[in-house]
View 1 (spheres, rainbow, N blue to C red):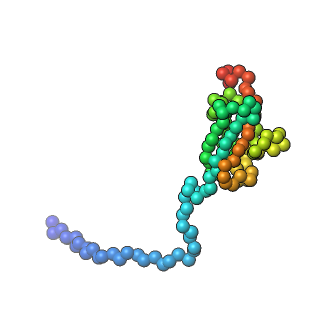
View 2 (cartoon, rainbow, N blue to C red):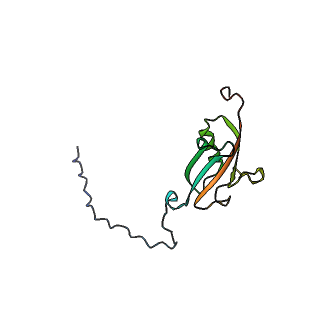
View 3 (tube, one colour):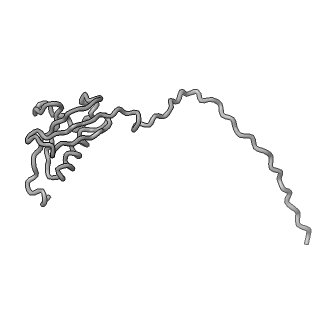
Length: 128
């Protein structure tokens, strides 16, 4: 049997770190939207009867949709309401905020904002 050939060990050469050329694009610094987005304090009250039991105070970013505010109101009433209408400063059926829009699109940017709401109760909420 012929003698086995020994494998020669390859010497490890020191690898240089690849240096990259500077980017040709101007990449902006990342800003966390949770920190950068302005927030607004909402005081949400039931139109009638006026009572502190149905007052909700929350702090939300201006990118919050009005639909999410509807959900918060529904949670406060434990899901026993539907047809929620939300208005700013005074309640009028013509001034109802669109649920698909954000607060920013509705003209709410900063400060403390008073929202008034009205609803239709669900008949037999336990059966639904």
